[in-house]
Image (cartoon, rainbow, N blue to C red; front, top):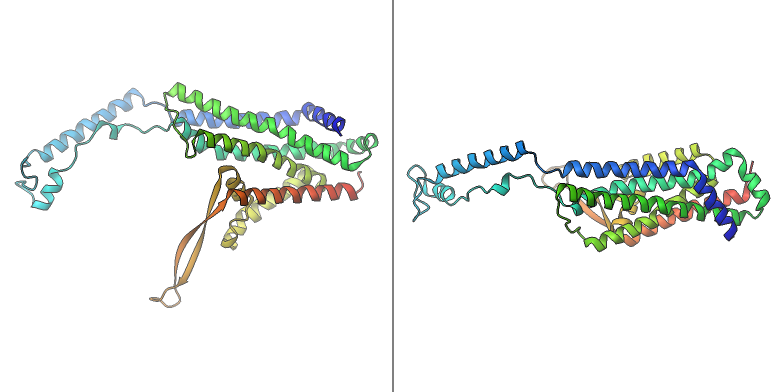
Length: 329
């Protein structure tokens, strides 16, 4: 088994497709880093001058408004009733910080870009798992491989593990690129490091869960590839899933909005997820009408991880049964 796994890893490393997908993810993450630099740029000299001018203008207007006020009695203003005079004479003067653009810190940039990075990671790992198997069915090398390793169970497990292991560097490279790139952006743009909602230790925990999610999606890809044997067929299933389960089902049955895989992946990786379901009751004041309110439901991390695990097990079981019972031709 060890020799089979080593051989599969060598073959995976030699496939240009794997490197191409990994490079695409890194380029996508670099695009997110670039957008972080753009969103956190320091203001230009012209913007600073415009802010200073706006501050001076508003300060002069405020001084003009409060000039007639009585310092001993703020409710005394020669042209206004007492209530309005009190409001105007006790108003606070503008401060320069109100006219300066608020720039995000590094932690905010990171938290905002983690979901997009995760989406690219899941798609890339799914593609890696699919590509490692369907290429062998398409070229006919699967049958040749079985002549050297005739026990299909060992072959299936070795390819499943190879796909999962090959996904780890893809995930790790993307996450490291994002963190290091945004830290560099913080240094260049003079940003504060900041503290995410769960702290930097929480970010490490999120990264660890993504390191587990990537191989899980690679396993889904391997299972679907063994079951369908064509990348086009797997793509059709993926498109159908997105259209039916991720998009249409929550609209038709709002109570089922916890089912989409994206919701559960978010819950697993981020620690929790939320979805909104409308709750309507008859309106007592208007016949035939309803009063509706939006009820927020939470999906805990454990439930999200369990749903992802069930999807992985279903895909792997389907792939194994197809590979075990069907001829390789």
